[in-house]
Image: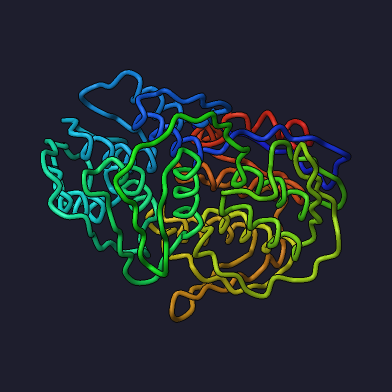
Length: 403
């Protein structure tokens, strides 16, 4: 395994980070572009492996769509292939084939798509076997499992003969990702309504559009964390917008309480240090990808906090709750599960001279623990894991001197 060692770096000067483009936006506009037969002017697509995999599979159109470990690519391409009458086999890594997809497949079957599981019921690999008739224009789907199922259906909805009404049942998780999908669809000419738990998308056509993908707020979160944990420094993050479609822009409000001041400019966002006011509790329901970053930050700076909305973390690239608990313990911090899906983050009581972080094949584990280098020597196992979303991450770490 190819490890990387981060040198202790308590502080740094003024540094500019040229952030990568948003994987979430990129993967959505690629599906929309495919549904408009590639006649749009799409620019600034993400360098992330997930996005590059999507680009390759859409361009080459093979019979077997191997998405590797890309969850969004699996969910989005399943709906795209099933509802556009493409006969495809979809598969991925062993971990990808352990991630459930039954809720999406059930919804697609209700609409009229023919889909067969190739192995275990409810999990990839699967085979889309055609779509000849829309059986219903009203589908109920759980809102608390994965917003990607919902987004996958929504992007295809305008081209269905009867359109589609989605009724989201139960608690709605990651609502900001659903709203991102709808707003991107709107920028390509689609009209919709979203009232309470009902989303209605009438039958209509996408319109050709020029679209530039924004920088990635999930990737930005690690630099907010680094500054929060450092003794001194300032960072400029390029390409971020104040009125972002990305739910992870919530990191601005979170980190404001953890010691990072944000100021937007035309080119991005300037980060400077400020006093910590405290984050007593936070609900990650609508921004679960920030949970690892915030947990590690709180553990390092001595902030005890209560977290909710972590349910979806168990079905990500790894069981992120378990992974966090194991790795936080290596520098004497804890993520303790209480009753009713409430977790208490207990900060570090002492940091060893060297900490080795296992990444669990999860890009966010590697990047979330990088700020620990402000306090000690850190060895990150499997440095290539960041290629999933942020291939230039270690190069950017060199800019602040932790490499």
